Length: 435
Image 1 (cartoon, one colour):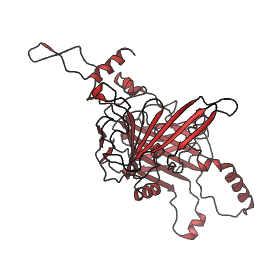
Image 2 (cartoon, helix red, strand yellow):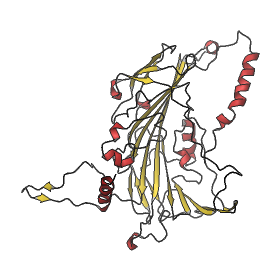
Image 3 (tube, helix red, strand yellow):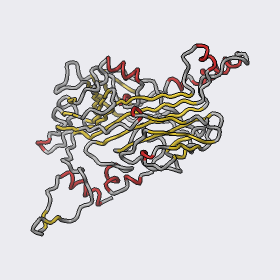
């Protein structure tokens, strides 16, 4: 469960203090140093390991040709749904909130000459899981066990796992054991309302083509948008390369994870979640200490990256491998040698990229000039590369270069020749035929 960001919980109090402070200032006080126009750009690259570009319905839709035509809607970069490049743009222009604008873009982005920025049809909120209301809805009887593991290595370390058990009986909750308090970074995602303008949107909902380049000259124009709102994005704001993630081993084994170094990555983090039967969940992370989980699969500020690198919560940019300890995701009675599934888990990985911040005019260094400084706009660009994979499922290259196939191929002598096919590929093709 994700708690509401602290900055939002205190927003009414902060607003009241701001009004009171403004009312007490003399008319000749210094100009506001918060720009009236603010722009946020999120850049993401995602790779579903061993799978092609997957589109709206996962690999199935992508393989049926729907991936390239998938319609996009803001936001797309926070949690990319399939392999590819993702770009989100949001602007708040205080003099004319929610009024359409245009962003001229470099040709390398392969999306035309300009992107329309439109207000969303409704407020885009953070995910808030529903909680049953006391007296109106009661949790059903049941139980759940959670095992927490952490660290890279072939074997489970001493003192692991931490185990937490919950039981619901007659509306009462019984617990035993504990898990580590979750590590959280301050939420820096924006809550977009119709007072913002965003891309992608209902007028322009195309995906960013693979190989598109963001670097180059950008200019945003529109009613009461500052004429100076143009900026040149360099390499630090560019799409990061895909994480070439490789996995090997069954869930009953130590599972090896490897990847090539990702250009501009400041740190890496991996975590996995799996189930052992219906009532047991297993959590693992690559951190050297407990408490790191899926909450770290987000854009992190440079200060948090630096801090958690020192604490070995994150892997350094020089890291190229990690091993999940043997058997932690194995299912009871699931020995593959006996015909069982062995166990599965979903793995997530992130390479944290650099951030770019711009303000115009630039902030003066002279104290007297700083008093008169009245910035017109500011910009924040965040970058990351992510990857995901199903552990314990060996597709045997079933998806590599998968294209519509003829019924048979002919050998050099003109006679039909069948290709050997993996079990997973046969299963996949059977699913496609029944869609």
